[in-house]
Image 1 (cartoon, helix red, strand yellow):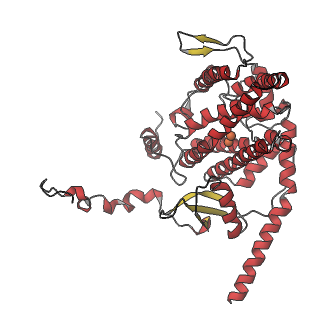
Image 2 (image 1 turned 90 degrees about the vertical axis):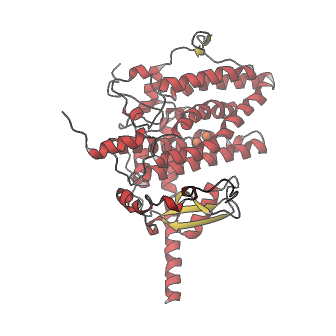
Image 3 (image 1 turned 60 degrees about the vertical axis):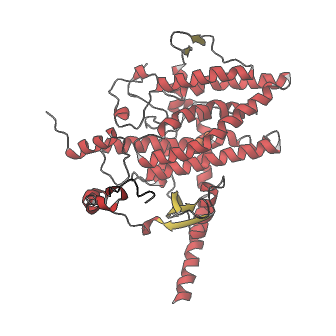
Length: 316
Length: 122
Ligand SMILES: [Fe+2]
Ligand SMILES: [Fe+2]
C-alpha cells in the first residue's frame, strides 16, 4: 500500500473545499511544476500574441482603429506581466522563463504562428482568437492556485473589449463593398480552424487519469470548451452574414449543440512542433527585442544606482 | 501517428521539448531589475489595496509602470510601491496556532449578546 503524506492529504482537502493554494503553502512538486508550465506558457502566449497584431498598428485604416488596436496590444503586454508575476511566485525567475521561450524550450499558443495578411484579420483575431481565449480564461478565474486565479480575474475584465472590437471590425466590413465582404469571409476562413485548435487535443487522446482536474487547475475539458465555442460562434456569424468553412457544421437538435467537422490534427502537431508558417519569425522577433533592449535595462539600473549613491552621500 | 509522448495538452499547457530554436544561446542578462509590490487607492476615501507586482529599476519607474499597467481604465487615484524584499509575512505553516487566540472569543462579536427585541437599533 502506498501511504499518502499527511501534507498531501491536507493539500487535497483544501482544494476539495475550494480554498485557494497560496505561494508559501506546501504543495506537491507536480502541482508546482504543472502550474509553472501552464502559467509561463500562458504568459508567453500573451507576449508573442502581440506580434501578429502589432503588424497592423501602422497600417490600421483610421486613427480610431489604430488607437483601439494599440490599446488592445497594450492590454496583452499587461496580461503577460500579470502572468509572469504569478509564475514567479512558484520559484522560477523571469529571466529563466524568458530564456526558455527564446531557446525554444518553452511553448506558447500555436495560434500566433499564423500570419496576419489583411486588415480583416484584426477583426477575426479579436472575435475568434480572443473569444476562444476568453472561454478558457473565464474558467481559469476559478483555478486553485491563488496568484493564477487573481491574474485571470484581472485579465478577464480587460478581455471583453477585445472580442467586441474584433466583432465590430468584421461587422463594418460585412456591410462594406464587395471587396471588403470578401476580405471578411477570407479572414474567417483562415482563422476558424486554428481557433478550434486552441483548445488542444481531443479528450479521447488522454490516456492517464486527469490530475489537473483533480487539483482544480482546470475545470472543463478541451472538448467541452471547444463545443461552447462552436455553439457561440455559429450563432454570432449569422449576424455577419458570413459562413464558417465547415460543411459538417450543423445544429443537432438532440444534443442541443452544433456538430462540426474533424480538425486537421497533423497540421496542429506540426505547428506545435515548430513548423508553422511563422514560428521562426515570432521567436526571432522576441529575441531581437530582448537583445536590443538590453542596454536600456542596464542603463536604467545604472542610473538608479547613481541616484541612490548621491542620496546616501548627501544624507551622510 | 507517433506522437505518443504527448499524453495530454491543455490550452496553455503544451509539453516542453526542444523546438527548432534549441541551438540558440541566450545572453545572460546583467541587469535584473528588482521586484516591486503595487498598492492602489481606487478612489478617494478607500484604502490602498494590493494590485500586483512588477519590475522596475527604481521607485519612480515602478510608479510610472504601475500607472501604465494597473490604471489604464482609471482604476486608481493614488499608487504606493514598495520593493518586495521589504515585505515581511506571517508564516503560513504556523497560521493555525498564530491566529488561534482569536478563535474562542465569541464575546467580541455583537451577536454574542441576546437582548430583548424592545431594544431596537443597538
Ligand atoms: Fe490577453
Ligand atoms: Fe486579448
